[in-house]
Image (cartoon, rainbow, N blue to C red; front, side):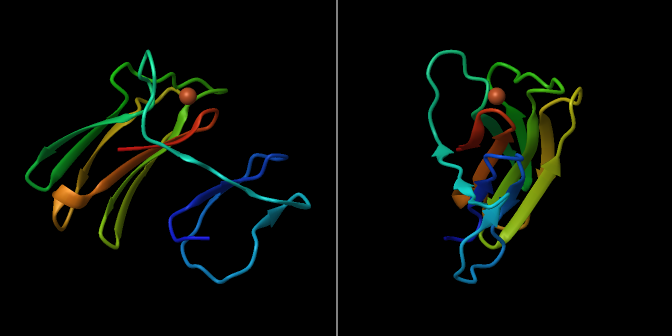
Length: 125
Ligand SMILES: [Fe+2]
């Protein structure tokens, strides 16, 4: 297990992000939780890969190049920007727009931007 990994319960849908590695196994509903694979490319209609624009310390993120659905049953749950040890996160709800702006401290050149779809998992650029 590694810090910042995302795990999902395949029974109830609980999603957790690792803040600190202790060494045990994550279990939910009586089963080991499933590690969400980080997806970095998408074929066809790109709706998940974050589109990032950097202007100084202002980081604008849209998910994705074609707007992702924001329906009750299928939506982007959060957008996250990781710069070194700092994590900036925007939680989203259905019917909101899957975009946000972060004001970051630090060097944007080595930042990671991720988005989580409740149906299609974790996407990163
Ligand atoms: Fe999706």
